[in-house]
Image (cartoon, rainbow, N blue to C red; front, side):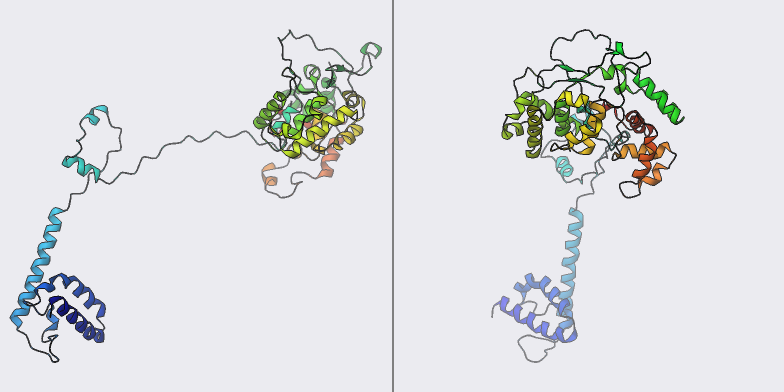
Length: 433
């Protein structure tokens, strides 16, 4: 019988015995460690001291010599002791902790060469945790405004793509808080559209573009004295003589409002510039006749979505057919302006209100659906905005009826009152101008 077979018989026999004693796991682990020594089974037929008196080839227990078993256990203990001593002597010393400071150039020259013992030890060293970088905390962002910043495109004046000429003094024109006070241009001919009223035929105390803002501020202070510090601190340029003298193309303003919907201000400017580059118009905004005949696919190459391209083209068709014109927007009442513009696809009530205020420069516009105005009015009447901020609902700061009741006291200059309500909470409305 070969030594391997003899060892297998010994393992199976001992497993059966120890299974009855509940020590099967201990026996298997012990014999697995002794498996390589079975080549000497002829010299040491028994490997464990607790098997004294058992022989695998006999059906009965055969007493074995105590001296032979003692020699076996002694040699086994000697081998284990020698192996543990060898492993302890060959174990490498723990690596020194890595330095956290910056390494100088002189230290880099003294690095050990590859292949040396120092290089090997350095490779096996445990990497140190990298030092955490200190990041600057971002500065407090400006207060968020519910009024999108991209509405600045609506009130953006027409830019001349030629050598700038010296600015002349603003022309004094008659102004009416219930009418359009902006200097409108015809989208097709770039002709200035004005109302057929001459200041020379008006009485001396008639409100003009030179003094309408002054009259509006006086009215606001007379209604509520709390308006005085706001008016003294902030200058409403949009209704100043300079702001009222800026030339506005209504088609460009309305298209800009559609382009800027649901995108950031920077993205809206980029899309608008690509839209202008689609047409050969010397860098100026295209005419409605050019946009109406342009395909939707070409309009989309500027970055417009399918819906926005359809909205812009539909607006151009309204101007080409005569349903909309600069003259109509200059002469019509506010209710007619709302009715005609809301009928255009892509223009909602809030967009039309912002165009009437910042584009047409109408003085008696008030947006009840603007969250910035609602929050400013709540702070204006002395409410705690911090507590109302976590309240749910659309009218969490002030109810719609209450806003309407307070704003009606400031008619016919509610546009100016709305502008100052944005300023109560330091809402950034400079982009709207």
